[in-house]
Length: 339
Image (cartoon, rainbow, N blue to C red; front, top):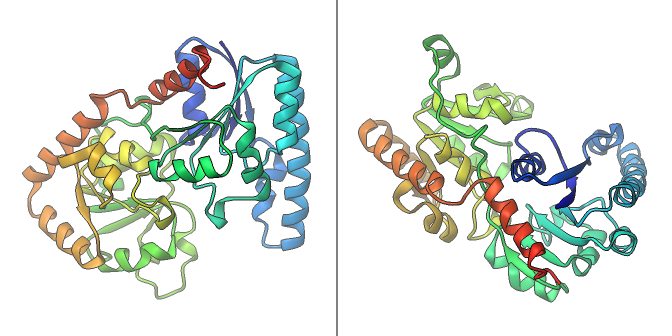
């Protein structure tokens, strides 16, 4: 099957994982990297005029490029990851020019004001199938005009998310008792402040931009993406995970990635995570409970190892790779059930 994939191709990003999974399955892939253009990076410019102008230029360019690639490649299916940059008219033109079925896997909440746009919402009815990581969003997608909305949870990539044995010097350089790999979202600060003195290591962009005197600022260790994530997780005793409010009762990428790396996961309590991991993780609901659980598990290495092992078995023992997810997407197309 010929697949036009539109998304971010950086290792660690869903678009990149999907591309690898599709190629492993033997499909012919033409990938359009939405982060492959200079103007994409300019959207976060501190100058609002430059940012808005750059975003508009980038959007025009990307829509022209998507249609051009589709006409040249003539895919059987066009799979879009998120799709912020695509206009409804472009999607309609791709369908008309190629006869391709259109699918979207939105790995954000399309109805969250921070992650949406008018074009994104108006594009929902254009897709033959709209895949979403949270079951709770399915009714809202239907109300927004989705022809078909399907639950498609996140996954892990065995090439990147696996236990690794570190030489002593690398382990010492990376080690923190408690690790969080993610961005400095203010909603997370009260939780992280409560464990800042528990040998906390923070991995991600912009932790060094916190105000002077914030106890989290000196905890920044750099960026752990792609191939860097597994060594960081393998060197810690507890890996933290926070489910954002807009993720509701669902899960996120770390739900699969942390256990797949063999690390002990301590995460926000949600219905979907408990269904996915069961006793293969530990859960918290408040900052105080987080502190209690950190202290408890730091004192109990054997119990941590048992929980981490169960989490690894739950994740790796099922059909939870990105290759598996791409099978689900393409099986729908193959059976013509996207129509």
